[in-house]
Structure formats: C-alpha cells, structure tokens
Amino acid sequence: MLDHLTYTAPEPKVIAGAKGDWELVIGLEVHAQVASNAKLFSGASTTFGAEPNSNVSFVDAAMPGMLPVINEFCVAQAVRTGLGLKAAINLFSAFDRKNYFYPDLPQGYQISQLYHPIVGEGEIIVDMAPGVARRVRIERIHLEQDAGKSIHDMDPALSFVDLNRTGVALMEIVSRPDIRGPEEAAAYVAKLRQIMRYLGTCDGNMQNGNLRADVNVSVCKPGDYERFMETGDFGVLGTRCEIKNMNSLRFIQAAIDFEARRQIAILEDGGKIVQETRLYDPDRGETRSMRSKEEAHDYRYFPDPDLLPLEIEQAWVDDIAASMPELPDEKKARFVQALGLSEYDAGVLTADVESADFFEAVSAGRDGKQAANWVINELFGRLNKQGVAIGDSPVSAGQLGGVLDLIGSGEISGKMAKDLFEIVWTEGGDPAEIAAARGMKQVTDAGAIEAAVDEIIAANPAQVEKARANPKLAGWFTGQVLKATAGKANPAAVNELVAKKLGL
Ligand code: ADP
Ligand code: MG
Picture 1 (cartoon, rainbow, N blue to C red):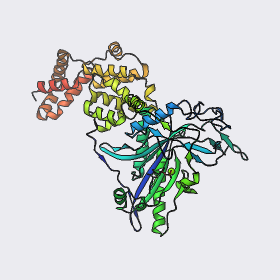
Picture 2: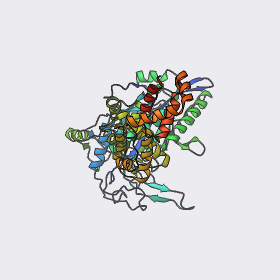
Picture 3: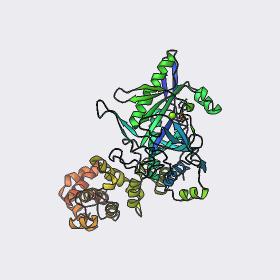
Picture 4: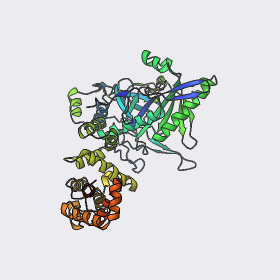
C-alpha cells in the first residue's frame, strides 16, 4: 500500500558558522501519557484537573507495605503503540527502580524499564511536504511511572505538592539521533502524536503535559554523521545537551535553533560542550543550564523486587495486532491510490480520524475528488474560520452528501450548491427538500434556455456583429442569459448554445 511513497533519510540543517558549516543531530525522548482510566500500578483515577491529591491511592502515596499491581490495559496500550510504530514487541520485559529524591515522588524512586523495555526497534515516517517523507528510527519504548507536581507559585512562603499525577503510566519513546533539524523534530512529534491519537493510546494533549519531549541536540561537521552511521560510534558525534520537558512544537523548534547556535559559538571559540540538562525559557528564547548530566549509576537502577518480570504471550500480541485501526500512512496511501486524491488533499483529510471518517462518509458512492474538494474547501474552510471542531460540524456528512448528489444529478449548479450549503449550515434541514422548497433548480430544459438565448440575440444586433468579428465577446451573451434565467441555467449548456446560434 505504501509503495508509492519513497522515504529519504532526514536531511541535515546546515548552519554556517564563522569557521565553516555545521550540521545538527537531534534525538528525542518523548513522554506520552498512556490513555487509561487507571494508573500503571494502582486503581486510582487519572482524570485531569481533579481536586489536588484526590486521585491518590495508598500505592501512589507509597504507604509502607503497599505493593504495585501491573495494569494490563496500560501494557496493552504500550504494545499497541509499538505495533503502530512497526516495532519489535518484547515478550519479556522487566521493571527497574530509578532512585532519586524529589518532594513529589513519595516512593523515592520511579519504576521504569531501563534494561528490558517492552518495545524494541521501530520507525516513524515523518511527512515534511507532499511527496517528501523521511524515516526516523525508534530505539525503544518503555513503560514508567509519572511523578507528582510541585507547585511553587501559589504562596510566597510555601510550596505545595499534588500527587494526582503520581504513578500515572507513561510511555517513553526514544528515537535514534536521526533527526537533523528543528522542522524535522517538530514534524516527528506531530506524526507520533497523530499515530497515537489514531491508536487511542495517548490523547496527545501537549498543553496538559500529556505529551512532552526531552530534546537532545548536538552539532557536528559535514561528514561526521555519515561516519557515525557507518561505525555506530557515538564518539564521532558532538557532545549533546538535553533540553527537558518541551510541550510545544513551536518551542521545540526555537529551542533547537538556539541551542545549536549556542554550541557552535562555544566550539568556534575553542571551548567544549559540557553534557548537561538545560531548560528552555520561552520568554527569553534561550536555553539555560539546569544541572550537569547525571549518569545511570547515579540512579542506582536495580530490578524492582516487588514486581515479577513482565512476560506476555505472542497470541495476546497477535490479538492486539488484529484489532489495530488503519493508520494514517495507510489511509493516506489508500485515498491517493483508490480515490485519486492528491497527496496534499489526502494528508489534510487523514490529519485525524474524525476528519477521515467524515470524508469517507461523504465520498462513499460519490466522486472522491469532488467530495474531497467540498470537505476541504467548503466544510473545513468554514469550520476553521469559526473555530468549530469537526465533531460539532453543523453540516453532517449525510447533508453534505445530499448537496453533492444534487450537483451530480444536474439539478443544481455549483453556485447554487454553495448557497444551499450556506442554508444547511445556518438553518439545517434536508438539502433536497430545501432546494425544492426554494425553487433552487437549474434550468436544464433545452427549450427554455434556447428561448432565452434567441431573445437576447434578437434584442442586441450590434453586439451580435461584434461577437461574430471577435468570438471572445460571446461570453457577454452567456452572461445575459444567466442573468435573465436568474442563474438557474447551466452555464456550460448556455455557452454551447450561444456559440451555435452565433455561428461561431
Ligand atoms: P538518557 O536517558 O541518558 O538521556 P537515552 O539513551 O535514553 O539517554 O536517550 C538519549 C537520546 O539522545 C536518544 O534519543 C538518542 O538518540 C539521543 N542522542 C544520543 N547521542 C546524541 C548526540 N550526540 N546528539 C544528539 N542526540 C543524541
Ligand atoms: Mg534523556
């Protein structure tokens, strides 16, 4: 199905420094909150915006003697995500404790999967423009717990802790350092979000922090990356800095751009990049050092003794695979191949499942291209202008289909169809009934059109002479006839008749 798409490797953004060209190398660790009603190891609710500390079980609060119990649904969601990224599913995985102190982490450790993640290598095809698709490799996805939230800006003297988020399931999706520029990084996150929304495994809400990315950035000289790809030697690449917790596609791009230029300036000045964690300040448009990079041994990872290794069966994975929805790449390819849509239109229509479903309901049994035009230009255009979501569209797929049927049967002209769409949008109702009630019917009766053409020709002899000398002027007659028939005559039919009558 995807044969017509040719993927290229990501393309390096080149930044000209004072002493020559530099290239960017980027790897992303995306934290995606698993769409699940309950937490990863407890039955507490995950509802966003609940009263602080109301969704906290004894397990989440790390009361002595409490034991975690794995939530099967969260595991299935991670497997589903892995399958959506064409990744290897590991039938054996295990949970480790990552130890650190934080006021919003009552356990004193985070349960994660360092050594044996549930999902192995996969890929994401990142769409840059129609016909331009790039392949970014996925290294792994592991399941882990989220921490709580410390609130420092509610009181001048006190900090507060909200544990509602503590223990919520996250998928950490780690890319290879295959991303080569700010635009690719944003497009990668957008595509990942789109796939997870199709799968229903993460709602992708970045404002709420349900999808956030740690962005690793380094710079190197042309040729270095190719050597890295040949040898797998990270030493060939520059030292990376990691920008933590980015939750906006726009800021991700701005932060990468700033960070790359900062590193280039240091290197060209003869300095060295220190591997560290940095934060992006959107107000000042810069990244700032947060802490120097901690090493894995600082966390004293060890297998969580409260949890058995996670062993799943291939048959269970196969069941999940069998229930997978059609994903954006496949859907887009089908729209292009089976319905003859342009890549661009197919991309717009498959941006989210609701739009794609709406389009399919309109196009079923009708002309695909015409349906695409109407859905994109008239419907989406209008929805965007008024800030209405497709789910709340005042015009249903059935109603829009009804308008298209009236065009298809020749009953109404394209112009009338737009008026009819407007009426359906504002007043609702059945398009065929509205058209009948308001006399919206284009005159296809040849006799009536002919009479109108004859009348106009007879009344304007001078204009007839001019048109015979210069056939381009025949359009004037068509205009007059359309006016006389109040726009109900079919323009193409009128054109043809005018030319015949004038002997052109
Ligand atoms: P850690 O948890 O220590 O940050 P991970 O291996 O989980 O380490 O993630 C490292 C991320 O950084 C991956 O996405 C990887 O592709 C990326 N990365 C590694 N080396 C570089 C580099 N030199 N430049 C840019 N990104 C890099
Ligand atoms: Mg990291």
